Length: 124
Image 1 (spheres, one colour):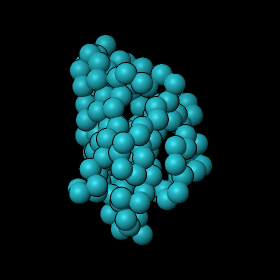
Image 2: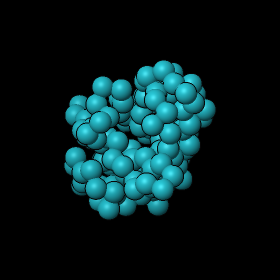
Image 3: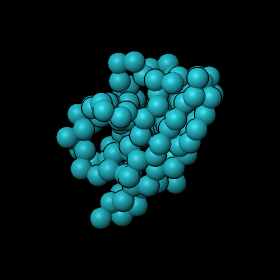
Image 4: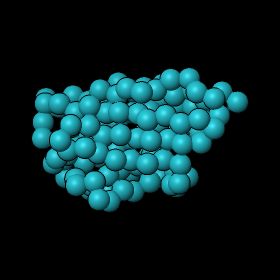
């Protein structure tokens, strides 16, 4: 059974940076499409980014490009989300998601496996 464990969240001042990690186990990471979503209190879960199997291609949500960078290390079975120049509006729980055969999907329903989430709080 695939398991995803996120880490790296925390409290940071506006303008700072964070790198979130998603450790994958129980399956074949190099064949899994990986993605990140985020959910702020009282809001829907928003698509952040997804990455191809090799890591060569990434797709970002509408407002995410530029400050968010998604990468993966198939040797370490880990996906990373680098967030730079954090803004208070980035405050949310960030979730890692995975599935097989869902290339470039931004719909949360397309992803079968989810982590428990990691909280990111940005103070102004």
